[in-house]
Image 1: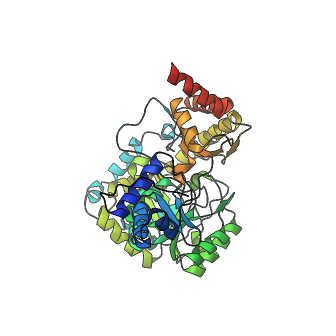
Image 2 (image 1 turned 90 degrees about the horizontal axis):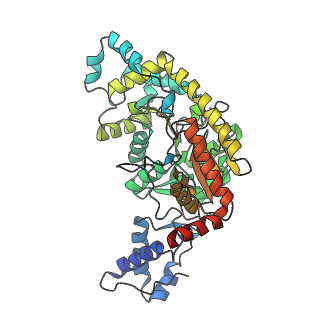
Image 3 (image 1 turned 180 degrees about the vertical axis):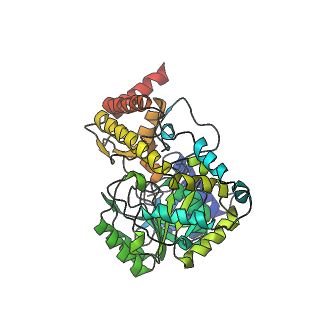
Length: 465
């Protein structure tokens, strides 16, 4: 049980206790997923009243050090010390092979000049240079309705709005329907961008257990019963990071829980286009409770920053106000280019070309890493590698980086206090060429073959010499 032996008594006691907690997290005394003493236990250990501990724990939770779950206790957060964002401002290590970030396979995106030339012929460009409806121009919303139809969502253009990418859509949705202190249920491993936005807005993510198909309905039910959850975040057709795909039966079971508890569902379907066997969204099962995000950035031309959002009107206009409050409107010229790509068929050609490339990359990954617990789907842009027990995800990420390859450990995706599994997400689309990808995969395989002991021995020798 944690006992902070040294506390700075020159500070307010609750701040000093939180500082001691942060110190012991940094020096490794407190580890991710470790259970903390109850308020009363820690008060007795330190010799203060329970109110002081309550304030100390609240301060530590704001710092991201701990998380509390009703009925289970308080734990050191699984991702403590891990930067949630997928990318940091400034220069990245361009020398390393990029297998951390999931990039859109730029090499399969043809020059966009022809599409822009077609737009120039319409002589409407000045129209796109003006302020316009924050929801989007009518013809662009109509194209958005056409885009989401491929995922089983048949709605009129009046139920579509346009955001500047999926990340902007998430920001608008969370700021529209949730306030600081509210809780959203999510799989215990999720897209880090969602974690970063929730943290910025003071929204707490409640972890829900998963299996090979993703979120477990019975676990979501238990979370809803023990805690006042207002929403749920899902990626049902290509979960990031585990690549899990939900069956229709699982989607129906989750929709029952969502309706029973009146949850707002945020369905993030940015990778659905890469899953050719199961693109059916959950949204049609809960049409009045769902906000559906169809980002195009991974599919084609990420620099356009366009995402279509589908929602019932009672939710749509609130999100539209958030668009006004953030950027007023998504630049109409960018949206016009994206819509031209969809309508002239070039978007589908780009996607088909990317999926062929992604399938070849997936085959390479499966062959090179055969014998290890790798999961993914043909056409997917990333795979999930479960590591041998001797490795932790953090240690493997460090070993890979020191060997010239960027990957992301499971800790980066973890929500709540449960210790992250020993696993890493490997991007198949970050490497510019197939040759570079193969080189990176072979480096990772050699690290696995050498084992954790071999890696530590090598590090000790390098330290000595």
